[in-house]
Image 1 (cartoon, rainbow, N blue to C red):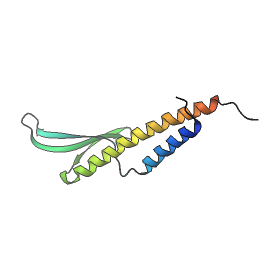
Image 2 (cartoon, rainbow, N blue to C red; image 1 turned 30 degrees about the vertical axis):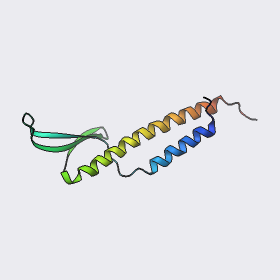
Image 3 (cartoon, rainbow, N blue to C red; image 1 turned 30 degrees about the horizontal axis):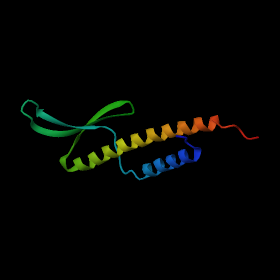
Image 4 (cartoon, one colour; image 1 turned 135 degrees about the horizontal axis):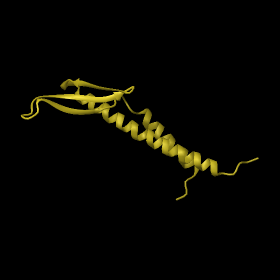
Length: 103
């Protein structure tokens, strides 16, 4: 399959558009912790993440759980889309370098 410069630029534009449509986001993983892990008593939610090279964890109140889950999903989409953008940009750059220069 031959990829053209125009098609790569179109794909990059689509990725940019998807990125602008993302809402609030936050990095991390969400886990349920227990005060008594053997009997699974006293459960609570905790988010763990690293920001500015510092590991952090925070408790998540039950009323904020859905919002946090949505923000985590948005961050996962963000990471996927930015990786896709980088891949497309590299391919575009390599394609442009292979083209003969016009004088």
